[in-house]
Image 1 (cartoon, helix red, strand yellow):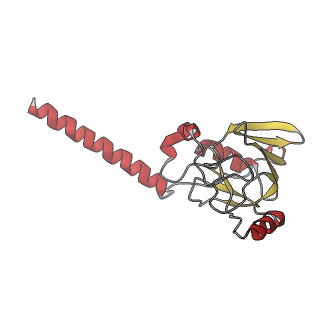
Image 2 (cartoon, rainbow, N blue to C red):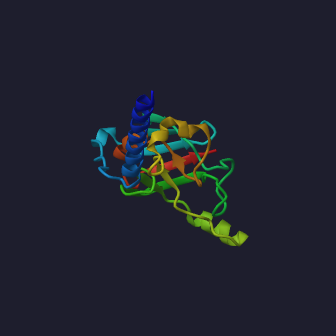
Image 3 (tube, rainbow, N blue to C red):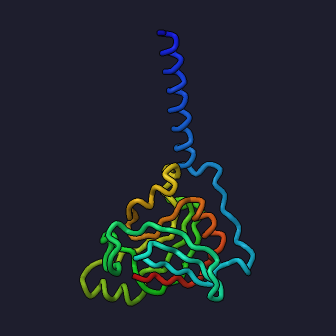
Length: 182
């Protein structure tokens, strides 16, 4: 009986070590590659985020290419007004750049704040915030998968699974308009 207990402990220890190694590899982005852009006819010419529906849609010439469920900022209702408010902005922006080495599995930077956002924040006496992204799960947490959708958890970004982020990243280029609706 004692031998079985030791074998079970060794197997359990190896499982914990293996899981830890996978989380560490994910955190360090080991083996991560940047997906190439899709062929032009499969690239989005518009991204639509509908906050109330928790949905991101990629469109090309009005045709839906793909739709993904999303998580938003931890206080998603209303337009982002200031740094740290947890809101996801609303309005029309563009994709400013693609980040293959993001702290969250790949990311696409949204051009928030606009000049109007900056002016409104300045008039209120505070910073508008920034670094609004469409991104995958935080590095080291890819094991969460779709469970991340159980709650709005970002700082104001649009969160998707890593597999979804790879697909979005391949279909959205810099300069693509993004509209974020309430």
